[in-house]
Image (tube, helix red, strand yellow):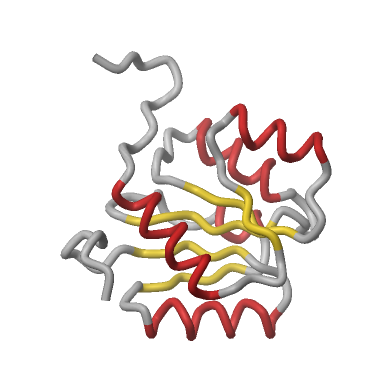
Length: 137
């Protein structure tokens, strides 16, 4: 097992509208030692109590209602600074550019679990974002 994961069991906040994909990812991430909270939409995640502690957001870009980027934008406006990645199939150049500007990696579907787990572990050991308006010193 990769030793880069922090000792506390990080929570993966998984937003995926496809039931089968969501269940499969939840199962695979649980087997890798992550706690997983799942949501069918960005709006469902936004209704959750404030997100705190060690963790990572894994958000499908193409969701009914708010897109993955819209959901992430709203979370950042609420000072949620945990790392995030977007998952999608066939990302267009505009999405890639927008995600790059915010430092949000994109993983393409169909997902390989090993690639997803490695990306999550990389994000968990990276520095967290500074809240909007804050400066890093």
